[in-house]
Every structure is written in C-alpha cells, then in structure tokens.
Length: 320
Image (cartoon, rainbow, N blue to C red; front, top):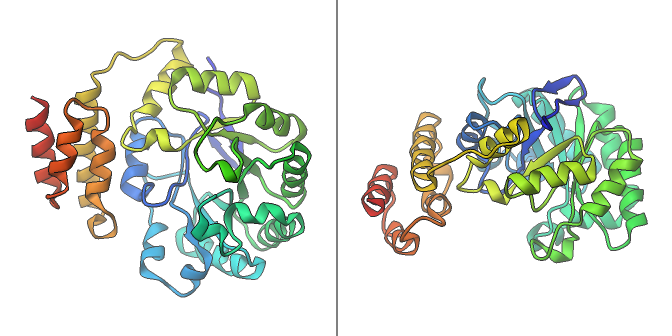
C-alpha cells in the first residue's frame, strides 16, 4: 500500500491525495464531488487578497464551505505582506479553513503582471516576509504553492525560506512559470526539494492516472500528491488512483457512464448550494463530456443550453 497519511500541523488525513486550487473550477460543489471519490484535502479557487478586502461578492463566495468539505484549504493570492495578513485574518475568522495557502506559482499574465503568483519567486526576501507575516498573525497552518525556477539552487533557496518563515507544508509544481502548462513536470527538482526540507512536500504537475501517481510518489519521496487539470470533468480520477495505491489493481470502469453520473451529481450539488449564478455551467459541461463518444457534437449543442437538466438530457440522448 502506497497511500500514506498526511499530517500538516494538527491536521491528519487518511490519505495523501489533494485537489489543487483551480480558478473557475474548484467551487464547493466540485470539491464535494472530488471528496466523494476519495480526495483527502481540497482547496478553494485562489482568492485575491485585494478583492477580499474590498468585499467583492464573487471573491466572498469562493470561500464558502460545508461540514462535508473538511478538511479544506483556502488559497489566497497577493503581493503585499500587510494586505495578505489582513485578508488571511478575515479568511480565518469568516471561513475557519484548516489551511491557508499562499499562491506563489500561478503563471498567468493577469496575476504575474501585478507582481503576484509566480512573479513573487523573483523576490526571495518578499517571499520570506509574506510567509513570516502570516505565520506570526494566524492560528491556522500556513502553506505555500510554488513553481520551480530556472536554476535549481534558486528553487531550493525559495523552499528553504518558506520553511524558515514557518510554513507547515510546501507544494511544488514541477514546471517553470514560462512553461505555463506545456512540456513536462520535472520530478527530479521536486525530489531535490523534498530531500532538503523537514516540512511535508507535495508533488504537483503531470499526475494524470494511476501509473503517474505511483511513479511520482516513488521517485520524489513526497508526502502527498496534488492533482489539478486531470481532475477537471474527471473527479473519478481520485477513486481510480486511491484504489490503485491501496490495492495495486486498476478499477474497471465504464468511462461514459461514470462521467455522465458525475455530471448529474455535480449539477445536483450546484443546485443544493445555490452556485449556478457563480459559474459558467456550459464550460464545466464541456470538461465532463471530454473524450466521450461524439463529444464534439455534444459540446456544440451544449453551447445553446443554459439549464443543467437540459444539458444532462442532451448528454444522455447522445450517449445512447
């Protein structure tokens, strides 16, 4: 069995499979669905510290959780230690997450252009200040998520500073910011970071199926795996990987039936938690129909629909 417990601060999870924070993806309904399939820890979409402090409604909604969504982490993004501290204190008091994570890895221009996300990695002193400011002010364990840098020693410098500043864990995405999501995740650098730190290190990037999950754990020696894009429209990936790490055997599954069932459950959860107004359902439906028989035609028809039930009926009729 390769599925180990994960301990971050006082939180201990039965396994070490984490759902990555993803903008426009990891809303409460999606997190709950991934949990049903075996995700041990889930994260909200990243929340902009400035938007949170100005009480932007959409940002406030991102932090919503429920009793079934525990333990969960809230990821915040910003570049000012003071504003991040204020936003994190608000998050701690308002939502009571088990973890507050700082985004230091997002490579998207609208984030890096304001000095946030992976742009922070160019300023080691600021990275240290941000994590120190948060760990001093919060009762909640603080973690960070980074990308690797051009030179290995720079990646290690950042990782050591984050640990020294009091972070309880570090997630490392094995791509450089310039790569965005192209090329491959460099697990050798993640392994190097893991070998140098005493806090838990979580591997992220290119974990897309049973074999890649097993090899990532074996090769890096990391304490956990964070799954991102491979879970979009495919929350069942957690059940598959969990089963494989526990038993060494693969689950036999009818992918078409499973994705339809998951999308139906997803729509129900969106309804239950009144989340329809805060997302683009058609975009999510595109993810859930990816790879299905006739998926291109299905997606073209979805573009004309807005109602969850109508989309489900369309997918069902197309899959017969």
